[in-house]
Length: 172
Image (tube, helix red, strand yellow):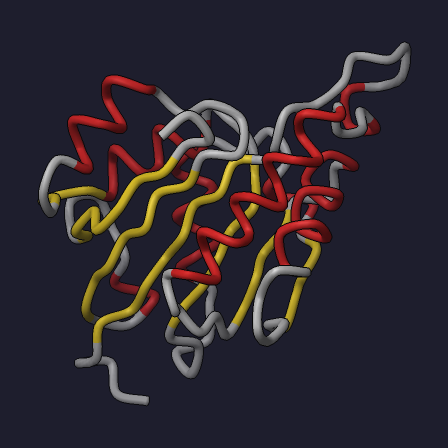
């Protein structure tokens, strides 16, 4: 694939988690989270983006979100469970994306806030339609995702180079 072709990044926040007496990393999804994860998966499948790679935090709630969402996809992308996503800053998330091989065109990252929302805001230089306004108004609730596009190699991904193509949250 040519680095001149647009790449897509989907920054997908885990669905609503429960609060049992376990370590934060081990928190499972709440019932509403299980429902919202599947709905988000259908919305992503409807986007017709063919994902080459999914990067997913190792936290229980992100792994459960991904399992329920990907079940809705016509084709499962290669999935890498990456511990560096848990509690990652936006800079750490961008650095992780910079490591993506250039043969991957479309990448989905399943992670956590506040890092995902900040990364989406930092990467966005322009936006289509009202996507930026909706993201600002709604914030980045559980199961929300932003779809960004940029042209160039993954190593060239940096603040302001992406276009926010779409934003979705369960209440949209």
